[in-house]
Image (cartoon, rainbow, N blue to C red; front, side, top):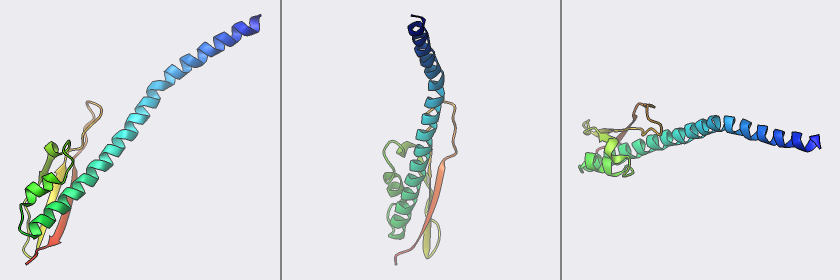
Length: 119
C-alpha cells in the first residue's frame, strides 16, 4: 500500500519541477523569437535600401519608395537617407528593431545600397 502513496508523491514532484523549469523555457523561446525578429528587420532594411537606390537611380522618389518597401508594421520606425553621388546613388535605410520584452533595447538595423545612375 505504501508503494502507491509514494508514486503519487513522485508524480506531484515532477509537476513542481516542470513548473520551475517553465520560466526558463519561456525565456529561451522568447529569445529565439526575438532573434528571428532581428534577422527579419535586417532583411527588411536591406530591401528598403535596394529599393530606394533603384528608384533614385531612375530619378524617382527614393525616400517614399524606400519606406514603401518595408512591412507596414515596421514602416513607422523606418527612415531613409537622401541619395548621394554623381554617377551612382547610395541610399541608407534605417529600421528600428521592435522589442518583444519591455526594457530590451536594440540598435536599429542599418543597410546601405549603391546603384549606378541610369542616364
